[in-house]
Image (cartoon, rainbow, N blue to C red; front, side, top):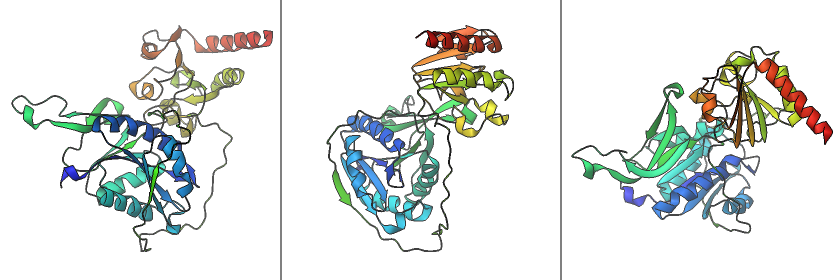
Amino acid sequence: MNLEEYKGVYVYAQQVDNEISGIAYELLGKAKELAAPLNTDVTAVLIGSDVKGLADSLAEYGADKVIVVDDPELKDYRTEPYAHALASVINKYKPEIMLVGATAIGRDLGPTVSARVATGLTADCTVLNIGDFPLNPVPGKEDEQKHNQLLMTRPAFGGNTIATIACPDNRPQMATVRPGVMQKIEPIKGAKAVVEEFNPGFTPNNRYVTIKEVVKAVSNTVDIMDAKILVSGGRGVGSPENFKILEDLAQVLGATVSCSRAVVDAGWKPKDLQVGQTGKTVRPNVYFAIGISGAIQHVAGMEESDIIVAINKDEDAPIFDVADYGIVGDLNKIVPALTESLKAELAAK
């Protein structure tokens, strides 16, 4: 493999029902940052049916170029045609870096494509940087250290440690990236990208599944990743019934209730409300951590919140290390008192 042939930072721009997913914009923002030290461009790969009209929005969020793979076979996501499309783009255009969102679609598509193009893939990354690999040169082998590598950081061993991984000998360097951990850039209104259409041809075979029906779940629950204020409960809340006091606080604040993994594992709340490495990464304006000890797995999913308020009876709980405001005491007394105080203050206004 001639590594010099591979240039550019590429992003798989996921779309569903002809609407760009938020993770695509997040990845474009990170791609711009990664492209700067490499002195290269950012390219979005847009795959679907009748999707060319979405290219301009990708340009506004940082794409210098958009490669559009448009075909009726790509109307709905299916592993085989989408993997064929993205792998064909990689084989033709030879990107140095290929980023895919770690969504339900991306977690299926990314590994399939990496196997087809014979490269590695680091899954569920939370940090991406350009740097030297190995991070610390081996004494006597300093000349073997490789520069301008994609350093991909992710939780490992059940979240008990953080691993930084590189792919120095194969291209593209591929990663799936957790939604919510990268920042979108401020949109550049009126930006236009160079649009190139590419179609490798699609011949259905025995690996093409047939979609009989699409059933969409109807939910009245706000996505916790979009919430401005989160009231999050952990095992310390004590019982599923006791979440009522958190719900009362959330109602006064116009907030959304979320939870830790322990709560989901206990069956108290659904997985969609879980914050943390194995849940969702959130960045609300205010995050209430109530009865949450602050294990590294949970903190990784909420530490970028603007303001963190922790309530816990254990004064040595790790959550206080990341909290802006901390209250040590019985949440069964503190939370209702806080709710009533806020009610009174809002009524006075």
